[in-house]
Length: 104
Image (cartoon, rainbow, N blue to C red; front, side):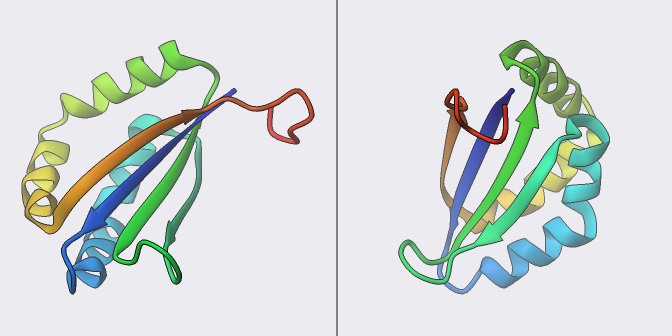
């Protein structure tokens, strides 16, 4: 298993709006294609105005296939057009579990 960590740093004052849009529209659409939602978080200490989601996949090939299908959905492209002006930066990481990790 791999875990994709997606961090979005949003413009100051826009986090509530981004979270609302994801809750009302984005997360259900992503789950339809991506499955494997581990969790969604905001920050309280450190880099504020950050929205983080964690997604689990069997392997990198599965991730690529699922994300490619998501990108073809017109509803997703419309959603992206609405949230992109709120996002300042984005960082993605692929996390690979250690041999002793409870998630494998």
